[in-house]
Length: 133
Image (cartoon, rainbow, N blue to C red; front, top):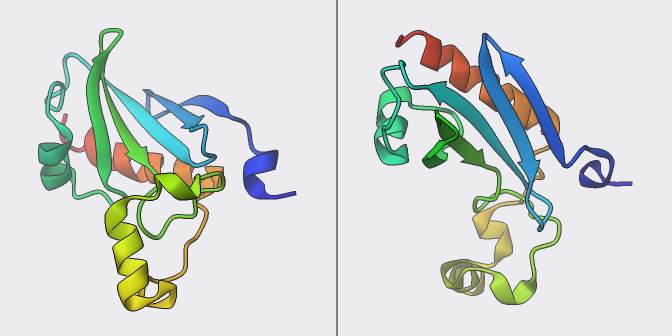
């Protein structure tokens, strides 16, 4: 069996007093979230600015108010990430053009980002967040 078939679809945990959540998208890849409390300096800042401030190793692709927290997220479905159940017809047009022009090997191999990777990336992100409060 493949990693995405063995891993849980939802994982919730705390790290350094921050609530974390990892959820599997219907296409099989993972999204990872950390919940920022209202009293934190980063509360309400959008993902573009959060990327500039935190310079995370995985890009922040989501930020939104959720249940009294500022929920920020990472998505492991970028150009070089393997998406297990991605329908061929839904591949972004720019990726189709890149693959046609350069060939798949030029874009690089795709890798599935497993749940351990998602946990590690959340912890690295939180380690940066705690230095700012």
